[in-house]
Image (tube, rainbow, N blue to C red; front, side):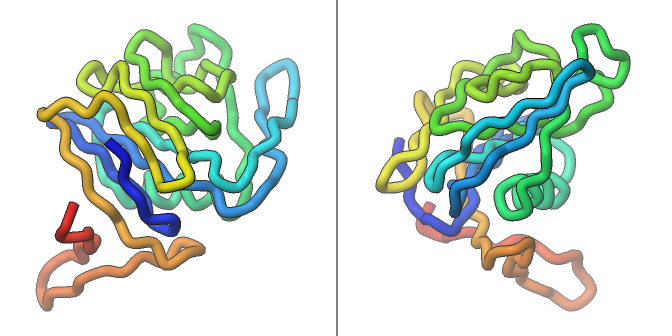
Length: 174
């Protein structure tokens, strides 16, 4: 399934987890920090930033994290294997032209950007940036997709209903 929308963020949801994907707008060097070293990965316009929330949680912090990496080039941190903090990381990020989801890796410990930790229900997906948008395959019927309209630089359009919390507007055609 290919979905398009160059300035939009794709939200793929399961029953107990989600992931966000959005294209990078400009070339930059992504800094990846580990306990023993620091290295840089070239990122090109059209590559994807994917944020995975293996145990769900609010979408807003994941959107902020996505924009911090995509727009402000926030460095990524990689923890050593068996680090006690891994189980407390609610969101993980990968940046690459194509990213595979896996439930068999430990959150925050995998420096290779072509893989991202996910829940079991999102495992086995391939998320790719294409000229026409974003391709997610396979997309089982148990998952839903929505577009979150991004207005750039962490400003998202919201529908405000008096007395209710803001809700992110999605494309009704998706």
